[in-house]
Image (cartoon, rainbow, N blue to C red; front, side):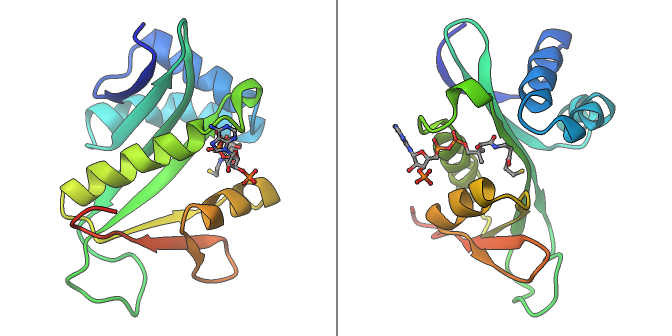
Length: 155
Ligand SMILES: CC(C)(COP(=O)(O)OP(=O)(O)OC[C@H]1O[C@@H](n2cnc3c(N)ncnc32)[C@H](O)[C@@H]1OP(=O)(O)O)[C@@H](O)C(=O)NCCC(=O)NCCS
């Protein structure tokens, strides 16, 4: 396994099991949903996924999708949005910059594909809210919806 960030275009059983493990020991309530959706999201529904590989197994991943129209009101209709719906880093490897580099890889991919804004629902934890705020995301409302405008000509 080559350490570092890798774009994922198919989800085999090993990767599914590794992602399940990462989610299960960070936010256990979210883990079962992975088996139902992750593979089809990436392989059939065109979702974008990046994984951060350690020397032996993945240490974190991000997944999201480009939305062709804004998914909440009061935004310019011309703005293409992307949603980030999963970002998890193995608990043992958190606070080493892995979450930030996964988010940046996703943002760069989106910007290169014409996306002007990323939206996401943060987990309702201080850890997640602070992480996104530090990475340039602002709260849109009280339901943990956050957004960040991308500079299409580079960050
Ligand atoms: C939120 C989450 C994705 C952040 O991932 P992470 O890899 O720990 O994040 P980073 O390491 O990039 O940033 C966290 C902190 O480490 C610091 N950091 C960044 N690069 C660093 C480096 N090279 N060395 C040491 N610290 C670093 C950051 O400044 C940040 O500091 P802060 O605690 O003062 O905010 C992770 O904690 C997680 O998976 N949480 C559980 C699931 C979750 O809530 N997901 C998000 C909502 S869906």
